[in-house]
Image (cartoon, rainbow, N blue to C red; front, side, top):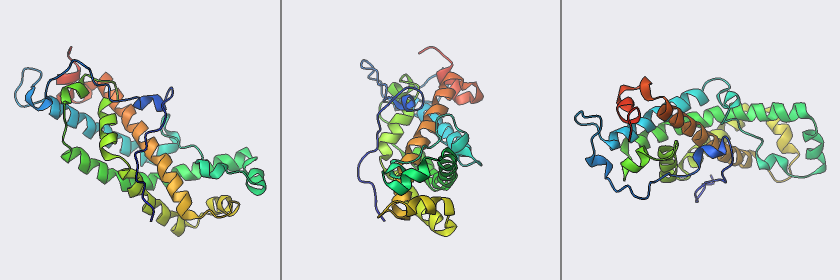
Length: 235
């Protein structure tokens, strides 16, 4: 089974790709998060705030994405047709000229991605629990998706590598006629290639959704008392 060996940061753009535009570290901030308590109450540090922010952001993101039509209904995580399915060829071009076929194929791939997200979720949860957080104060005061950007950089291609075997297995078991019809028109392309391409797209979509949840929690932290102690006060 192929693994992705390098990082997967894609170009940023407005809206969903703009969600993860960087780490947002403030140049003059030299505080060590684990030594800084906030809110005038004992034993809640910037480390705690970042970890809690990531815990809630990832839990909410995966709950959304693994629900029926989770990717498809998301404003930031809907997966477009992978580049693989846009290869030129007379047969494939004929199939993809049909908007109805393109939409059905795209929808089906978004549904399959839900199982990829289920395979990735435990890995993210374990990482959030155990990850070492350096300069947590900078993450607290950083961009709306600073903590998500930090977590993604730390995990690298781990989600892609976790999703590829599950997506490949699912496609083989399902023997999906829609995906099969598309792949049959692409010479030299098989289910493993399709699983790899879909995992790359699903990886981006998952991080977009986590980033969106982080930004919302920062904006409206009152739903969690611990976060409200940090993000509902001037910094």
